[in-house]
Length: 180
Image 1 (cartoon, one colour):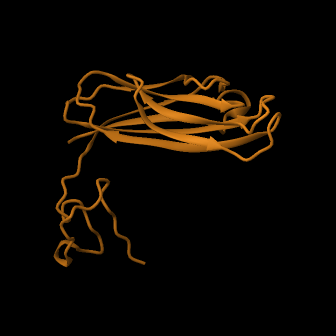
Image 2 (cartoon, helix red, strand yellow):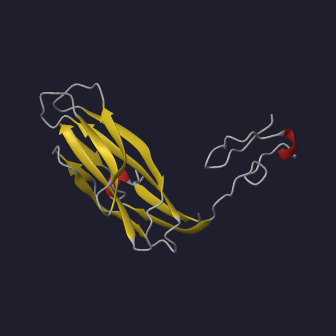
């Protein structure tokens, strides 16, 4: 089976001609793209207990911040947050649901995901996991930090830490600076 790799930026409006394809592969250069390079990579993971929210106001996920200082204002930043959590009824009379958000240091929401599980209210729970991603040009050479925020519209939202009995339910943030 043949395999074609599309660059992270996607294809341009220019067609990829047969002349640009060699050895069953399309590369960024052959397709007429300039591909950025990873200039630096930083990683952080949540090592404390689980973070909990019972409020419809965004609460920071504790002990999880990942910061990067771009080397150029023209650089792009790719950030990915991987998490595991739980919706719980918490004595509520309605079905529990909430939201996980990926935020930067100016509390700008870069990505968000709503969790709503059709489970009985009150003392029932449902585990979930996910990945939030963002790619943008912050146009700065100042440090940028990233964190997760959670809110519970009803019931309780929990993001697992990696201590105790939840070692296999890690939550982490990875940030890369990509050259323009």
